[in-house]
Image (spheres, rainbow, N blue to C red):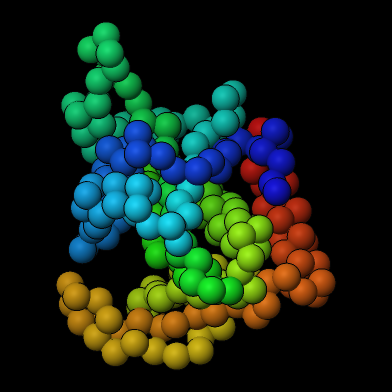
Length: 206
């Protein structure tokens, strides 16, 4: 389990109350976004599903200095009980389905104003840890063949290309690589994971 007490960001389980904020990121991050109904179903009825959100810790990372359309749209759509607009605390989210002993990452996204700060990497680590905790031996995902930045992050955590899904993405027919980790519960993998955690957490200290 990750100790977030000294980090600028925390990862927590996603709840149905998070969906409105998640959809604002979803619609910017993906050309074929999931619907609110899809997320509601995942959280309420899919027993294989494990979803997470990332928020800035209290007193930790601050929002970007320049307001983005993401924040402006949230101001317009989300109100507190008193009618005062509230800023969404969610800056990234992701999740996986546990299928037998394999965790299949179904989605991972970071708000564009918070990218390149190590948040996606923190989320990936949290999902790998979470997968091990619920009994997964490996973690797998699909990634666009053109998404070299994401592939580089996954390779950093020992994901390797094990196959390809032709015309996987419905928006443009692009192929997907299937990337899978070695067994994540081995002493060797956990040792390497701990080394990567230590380096990232030093970057994310408050």
